[in-house]
Image (cartoon, rainbow, N blue to C red):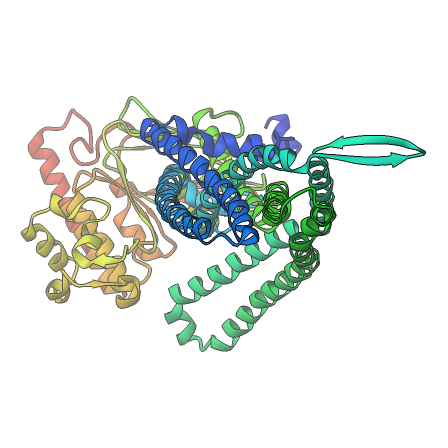
Length: 635
């Protein structure tokens, strides 16, 4: 044993969760930024360019309204009906332009948002649904629970809010640049006398607006700071509640059979109490923020008129200039108040981004571990021979606790091997071969001649037609109709032929035994040379198990069959048995036993060269017939 095992170092560590990472925005750009360099980059860049042009047009609209407002109030002050009708015509044109720009801008922005979301969703879901990551993720420490909610909801908010916030910030920057110049020209010079000395302040309304909005933004950020954490807590609580409801729906039959509705309602109440607590914390944060922003919004309407009114009363500016100054001040304050107006959206966006980043980092850690195996990772690779080999295999839990230590064995093509004993260790060995359990060390050499067909305890039943369930994971078109019918008949599911094109949630419509029979029907369709069963007959009665195991042997006479099972009846279908049993230290020891009457020689193929190349074909056939009779007697 190496020092890492002695020190209890966790296998598969190196996910980077305890390392100081780059800044938040740098992480976000690293996650979502490659979209702008993807295969759609020219289309996206064109849409972004159009969006920027439309944003400039959106800024031109309030500038035109500001100029139009000055002309209108001047016309009213002069009681000029001709100028009044001219202003009516101008506002109609401005209105038409505003409607066109706004609707076009909305379509372009939503097209970019959808494309960005589609790209990021595919990036994460492809990584999630690859190499068993979706399964391994459940055993990893860290904040990456509810990956389905993060992919479906948080990615949506991440991309939509990011574009909304970037657009609004760019819009406010243009608004600021435009109305600073307008307000500066309208403000004139303000004379201030201090200690008998006159001071001239050019563009004084600009400075007032800057100080006013900056102070308001600082106070809003200070008041609303707790809102970010509260929003993150609420989104997590909402995701947990949704996940609890989905789990109850998926396991409705088991809940009903055990009359567990009371317990489920209790659990739902506990999950909803988490929502209530997070909701109340968010409410407190929003109350503080809204208390400030509501007063700020009302006061901002009157403040610029009160500041500019003395100059109008003194006759320095006209009524139109007074209203133009007030509107320019409001536009400038609006641009400077971007942090105040968007604090809640920023909080929600950041919470979503952090949840997506946590999922992405966890998946990336799994991907990196698979691409650069080291002493803390089980290496699963193809070998150059038709043999399944375990070399110094140590299997550990995700937290580093060793389960099986130093296991070595070979399973040659054509053998039938039963793995029993400790269920947890046997199932982990099954998952190691399947590439789902990387925690540990050592090497597993997969046979070069075939892909192993894995049959779990409960076969996966995708929602769709029974035909699609039967042929999964292959496409329905891969198998002719007569093969589908024959496979169902052979496993005792002929009564389902009339429903083969029905769509249903089959895991709820079929019994556990029928589901396992369907798994064997899949096996008959795919015709593998290596079969790995994990308790694939435990839901069947003894006669059903006997029929399916005999069917497996008859249909696949040269196949290698490895079975994880825990009752003695399975031994008659296998030549070797690996028994996994815990010792006094808690480690699993592996004991091997063979049947003398059915023992293949190492390196020989059970189907074609069972007793060696020195026997003649006729002798081998006669002896094989004799063994079959003896096997029947034992059954």
